[in-house]
Length: 237
Length: 241
Image (cartoon, rainbow over all chains, first blue to last red):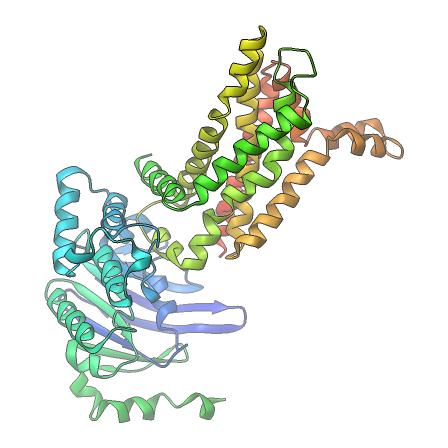
């Protein structure tokens, strides 16, 4: 579903993403791992069409993100970093807006909103405005927005960041569940999530892929593997 | 067009779900009232026209329109929701137009609420209502031109204050280019043709006709091209974010 070839994104002289290639098929949950500033978010922003790649290709469901952005974007559900959402809207209003933007109307829109609300356990805050929500609920609201059109591809940028352990557990279960029928990429810097939710992990450091494979293939214990291949910042400089 | 309307509706909703809309409307109406009746000497003029009302609009809008429009893109950038908006399956121009229209509709509503001024003139005398209608139309386009400039400056930054100041300066230029004290100064050392060219960029020059009740296609074209150009510039700025 997602095919990335030799993707490069340069900001001035700095190459945030430097020749990344991988594919994600239906039924796969790929964990995108790496230290802060390693190029995870930048890669995801290129998959979703927010950033244009400096070179290389991204295609989603066979549609090139640069050449046929609308077709590609229709297939993607995206949870941006920090779960951005319009603070002055209610949860319901926000989800209805997202559904309308995805071309849903009338009964289809109502059904889509109801399904997303149920999936993300948002019933109790439906009429609350987003700026009054706790971080966990705000994350789930934004996740519900990503799921609203039942997309085939999910791109989730740190979906569990800032959540409490129970909420993390819930989201991981949800991701695993969704991964059975969709292609899912999610980024994280929490290693236990790889074991908990992924079928495959990709470790990225300084814009390059340094390791990939199933959690078992990468070796155990994971955190030692991770430390060995992504040296701490102080050593790099 | 459906997406444009979905975005416009959301944007209008966010005006009214925060105090912005109410504060703006109250201040706008208070200021128009003050400028028209006190500073503009509406009654002392002894003529049944809205010259005292429309004459102030280029100056009044100079501060108020950037205040109404500064959040359009700056706020999206600050909150990160721009990432959400621009990864939806829409063309960027749909988002730009939707946001612009929402604010323009809001400004039109504020302008419509000044109807008591027109009523007053009609009660006290028999003004030329065609002229008043033309004045309102011109005022609406004037607001649209300022607003489009504000859209552009708002897209440049995540800081609303910066967006506000940049757009006040840009709009001030649009006024001063044709403001009599400035053109009088220019005439002293530049050729009249040059002064006329500069003045042709001024909203004041083009707004004058409307105030006199003349709807000239050239004036309409001027305002529409300022709007078109600014919104196009907005799309270029957003593409190079």
